[in-house]
Image 1 (cartoon, rainbow, N blue to C red):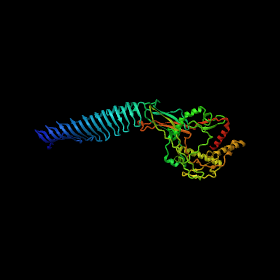
Image 2 (cartoon, rainbow, N blue to C red; image 1 turned 90 degrees about the vertical axis):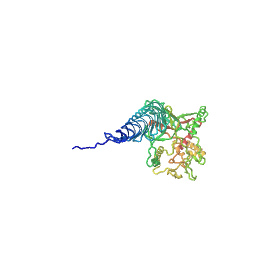
Image 3 (cartoon, rainbow, N blue to C red; image 1 turned 30 degrees about the vertical axis):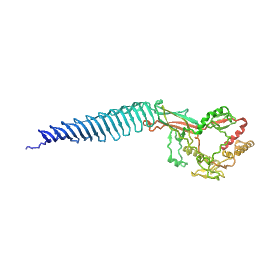
Image 4 (tube, one colour; image 1 turned 45 degrees about the horizontal axis):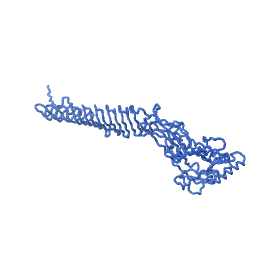
Length: 588
């Protein structure tokens, strides 16, 4: 039995002379395309909409059955949207493409590809303005990046290539040649840290790049005296130990350190140090250090002494000094015969042990320079004012010039109050001293003489002080008393037979209380302590040049006491000079 099936008409709309004319809807045989719009002479012509089965569609101008003119196209697979000119069904001419990720291209197209001048915005900050070729940045153009950097120059196949200028958000900039998106060829970089490099670049890096620092000194380890300035120099070298003269403006810091001694539980600063402890710095010498103040600015007294050295040296050469002939000797050296030795000062003069020290200024004369004030005069053990000396400014960083930098007049500053390594050393020394006192006076002895009160400071440290009649302070307060003591000592030493030790024992009378601080009270030190220090030179360029810093270098520095000056006295005064030197040794 035959079945009659109704045949569906593919076109529904207006016709003229049996041809589609006017508005109509046509469904193609493959059921994939569907057109709704205007027709002319049986062809799509005018405004219309072409839909595809996958969801993609075009709406716009048609000419003689082809997509030509201005229109809008939606791509269902990529979710992109294009609005602009078409030619024979392809994006061609000026148009705007909106991508799924939010990027927008606005410019010229050629056969469905970005071609010619255009603007590509990949984010709110990243924008390229320039020429394209085959969907890629090619030719001259400028690119702004998300981080704020901006490049202006030439592109090849979507990469920076040729001459260009890169301005970074951190105010660094590079002007020169690029290749494959890297610095390559001749170029100049002014880094945000202040470094400047001008020369050849290879694959993003300078052809001559400093990789290490070298410390230049007269000797290693460096040995100096207290109060003696010294100088150092630093060179920037490459892997072949060649000096890199192109290295300009690298910031170099020099600092000093002292051996780190971990705090012991129960020590004075243990609880406080746990909260504010500075991180120790490892060294190649087998121990860690903590920073120690270093300066390159001489005080006014030192500058004056330096200026007077020439004049003083001339007077000494002419024999105008009152002390006779002066000869230098190392620490602890003696020339034969009878002489008096004293520590050399920075201006070259000798300290005469026969002269009593100048009395200290009273607190009323300079109250700003006193740390502890004396309250009342009734207590013989009252605290005497301690004059404080402001620390000199720290040494400043310097920048390389031609791969070289130097410092002159470097000096170790006096230690700051409660400098941790020195506090630990003093505590160990005090502990050992207490053990020796117990062995000498017996168990339970405090070592506090009768007639002297014991005072406790707010910090909890005990202040006890005394000295003998031949001490320095007693001689300052009563010069005549000093003379009588010398005379009595001389007569006793001549009349009494026995060893020298017995003569010294008779010179020591009953202790009397004086105005002086005990060892437990922190003392203000005016010079750096003798010992071993460590000099550290490091690259502190900030931000680091090309993301890296050079490794630090270290140098051992040994600080010794000043050289002694041996003053040769006339023969007639030898006996008295020797006696006075012995008396001074008792008070030390």
